[in-house]
Image 1 (tube, rainbow, N blue to C red):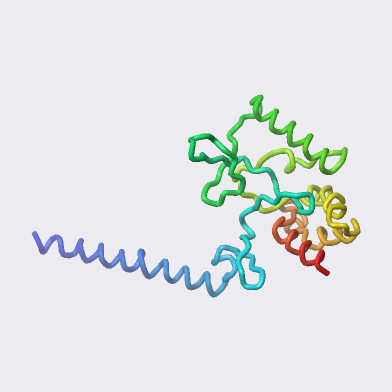
Image 2: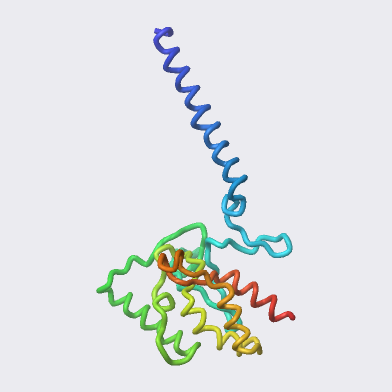
Amino acid sequence: MLRELRPAFSLVVLFTLLLGLAAPLAVTGLAQLVFPFEANGSLIRVHGQAVGSALIGQDFRGAQWFHSRPSALTGTNAKGQTIPTPYDASESGASNLGPTSKALVAHVTARIAAYRKAYGPGPVPDDAATSSGSGLDPDISLANALRQAPAVARARGMPAATVERLVRRFAVRPAFGVIGTAHVDVLRLNLALARNSQK
């Protein structure tokens, strides 16, 4: 019996070492060598201190900041009540409300009203009225950022043209001119905005 079990046991040990240890270490080492920024969570640092990730949005508050796409993430407080937990990186998800949902219509209507109150009348970009599928989107559309720019400039006492130039500088264009849409990473833009405000 032992003679029959020995090859099976040897294969388990071999493949555990090979696929459970050697292969992950090789892939991790290669990723660290070729893509160190991405392999370490795409962390954005200021003076050596991590302030966020390029992959996860943040909940910026106040008229002096560009605001991220709405996040529908919720959690539970100590009393067991459901509370909003926007951009909580420990979870991911959407509202799961269907297109015929009255709650969804109410949320979108409220977001449109709040957006127009903050940034003036006119079209409201889709990504300002609807929450993301992950609840963690780090980017907003270029159109959304440009609509927010004049209000952010006013709140900071900066020329609107300066803030708009900053938005355009941080805009990521569609790949090959056709894949995806023009967008801006909100954290990077706000960090640049803070640096420019200090000058």
